[in-house]
Amino acid sequence: MNVVSSAVSLTVTDPVASSHFFTTHLGFREVLVHEDFVELSRDDAAVDLVLVRRDLERCGAGPGPVDVIVSFEVVGVAAEYERLRNEEAGLAVTVRREPWGELVVRLVDPNGVVVQLTEWVPPAGI
Image (cartoon, rainbow, N blue to C red; front, side, top):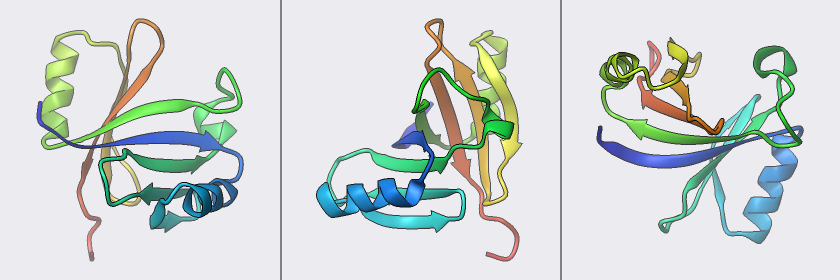
């Protein structure tokens, strides 16, 4: 596997308020704004942050006020899915395509840490 970038997704009630805090106080900038999430980045080696609106119908309640997902952008997520499936690596979600063009696979470690592998595939027309 070749990890090409990393991001931490934080599930929050109000992504706009969290974005304001990180951009005002911690030097992040908004790089992608969607009605359901805001992606923040910096020009140094800091990990990107993705502030995702809590959606109880889609994701469930979670164990606390914030659900953390460790996310790695990779090349060839479909092949990684097959490899992880063959290794019985605790896959939680099969490969799926998000409306904004991302391919996603999720797995869970023995302690419940959720890891997400993603690959950007632009939607048709972009």
